[in-house]
Length: 433
Image (tube, rainbow, N blue to C red; front, top):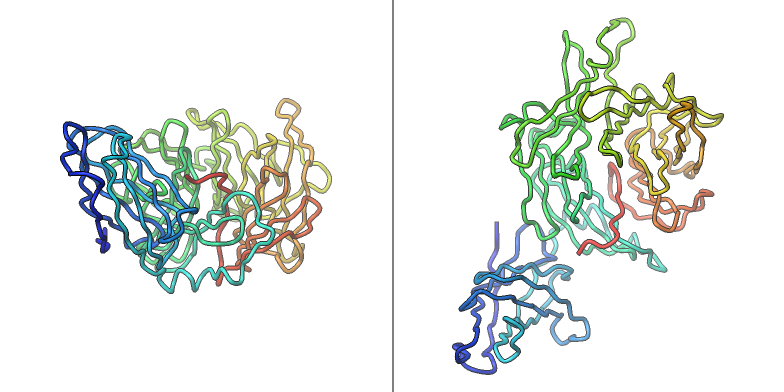
């Protein structure tokens, strides 16, 4: 719900009618109850045109940020990168005409306690600052999605009354989340929401509407054409399985697939739900899915549903010595073109690792290209993630310990961010806006 901020509008350098030129009226400055770190300036022009907004903490013009909006009469311009509980000044310039500039100011609200209780900046200072930004979510209710910078400071967040089950950075710097408002104790979610960092909604669907006729769980992604792809729960003869569901931008069903398509014969003596826990859209558009209980990663054709290969225990790709992984999460193709994952381990081998494999699909064999153990204190038997950063260090989530860590490929920890409780995964964002 938008909240109106108190705003003082100062007189421009000349009359509003600006002769025959363009003039502007600032109708309001608003914020949203989901975040104290952003606002919107709402501007109306006398004719269609561009608007540029310069904004800065009061008395600190050296820390000026810029936002702009293209040709139209009515503009609602998001101001990002704000600090909480801070007075700001701003200047709008319509159509590049400094003589028509208008000035104003506003004050941002405070961050709610539940946001800072889950992630306390004072316990997560990174020095020297790392590169990029880090996206993660609480697993609490109410939920919160966080973006912190390389020094560990919160630069953006979005609260929700729901529990966030999964969050991904998608193309065009949008964020897609799987959320739940049914108090489901597992990884299931009934709401999919894709937004910009300015909190503009790109996609919103609730299970039971349009083509969203299943319950999603553990992961959701956005394809290059804007389709939304998710892992779903499936049932056959009373046995639970996993599936994939593809919706177009309107929420219409385009395609579905089930693990029962690939494993049609159920042996009641040893059947377990494969337990899909991560989904990655490969460079060729096909799907890479991690199945935890199988200790396998599958590549699935995005139209035929054929399983192109399986990597892991009893898979079609032969594993090298030392490459066996247990109950993995966050399987994906990294920037080097290798299949990378978070190897959780288990009670028989209580060590978690980041591992990566170079696949020879023709020869059905794999080479281990990365084998980085986490310190024993960061062992996470469930959940978690690991990815390769641009500098070739590793960003990992030790989920059950509430730790987000950067480590070298040799396993040396550079820094840790601390959360109050479990966090499912963490993703790297090079430049959010």
